[in-house]
View 1 (tube, helix red, strand yellow):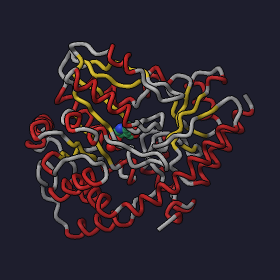
View 2: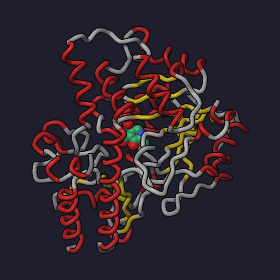
View 3: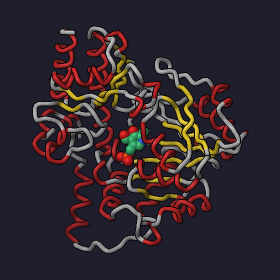
View 4: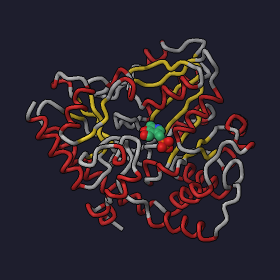
Amino acid sequence: MGSNLFSDNMVNIAILRQRAFNYRWAVVAPDVIPLTAADPDFPIADIIKEKMTSYIKEGYFSYGPPEGFLSFREACAERAIHHNSIECNSEVIFPTPGVASGMSLIAKTFLSKGDEAIIFDPVDFLFRLSIENAGATPVCCPIDIKTGEIDFDFMESLITPKTKMIWLCNPHNPLGKVFTSDELIKIGKLALKYQLWIVSDEIWSNIIYNPAKHISIASLDSEIANKTLTLFGFSKDFCLAGLSVGYIISPTREAHNNLVQHSGCLATTYGVSVLAQVAAEAALRDGWNWHAAFIEHLYKMRNYAVSRFNKMPQISCNCPHATYVLFINIDSLNMTSQAVYDYLLKAKVAVVPCTPQFFGEGAKGHIRISYATSHQILQEALDRIEKALNHI
Ligand SMILES: Cc1ncc(COP(=O)(O)O)c(C=O)c1O
């Protein structure tokens, strides 16, 4: 196991052009490199392929249990207990068709029209979308884009009788910030003081670079844990975005049952495909050696990309402690992020413009790139960006 898994020849662009959607290879012109959505360019771990293949060969695809396979839910609980120090068991694990879908389900289950939920600004658009789709209102708490600091007095001032939840993105997309225990305790105390739910999206929690450490808010204190719904996924860790699978850990059986009831799984209108559960369970039980090699590769790509960007004229970025996205400041270019996107697209690289639509008002003056690709592709993309910026 090692860097061969992530060498240049492991990226099959011909296949990606057929299969990688969501702003990526399949939807850009053939001569464009997409450093867009955070979805790696690599094939999955062999062990996951093997487990899926043997399940397929047996040939039975009957309905699975409405709340997901017990063995998968047990694997989720074991990971949460042993790795994240979250006290739980399989009875409060609910597999969802991806974390995005889990976020929507939580919002639909626990929020009503007129309710408010606090989110960070900037943050991934899924937070705003999930809350708005439930008829509730997201209320933005700024997070300092340079230091990652949060003004907790300001956060408290946002709380009204309508506030029902605080939504956390830990680690944070797009800042790559890892929350400290001190910050998490402050958030937890606010939630307890005002009897709010905490929704902790921890999809990025395993994409983390030494010496940073991820702390699950539900691991800190039993009272805080009792108010926390935690989400984990497989798209970022194991390149399984197209299988649509993740899971929610509820603090109580009552909260879990509430999610189950609202989801529709008891009437078969909701659920994770059995094959995706087989893949995800294989990842949780046997995928961590592959994952360690993936992190080793990402660590090199992060250092390479950060150092290259910080040498380019008029742009700069922080070095993220987690995730495989870079949040790049373009203020000095005096162009909107949409204009920078258009300009770089002409240079044959697609990036994510940090418009309010994607990350909120707080992300203005930035673009975001993903570096979960091979060194060769990243180098070519960065060469094109550098050359283009030299001509501004
Ligand atoms: C913070 C965050 N939450 C959720 C998702 C979506 O996860 P999934 O693919 O499991 O739906 C993403 C994907 O970019 C993300 O960055």
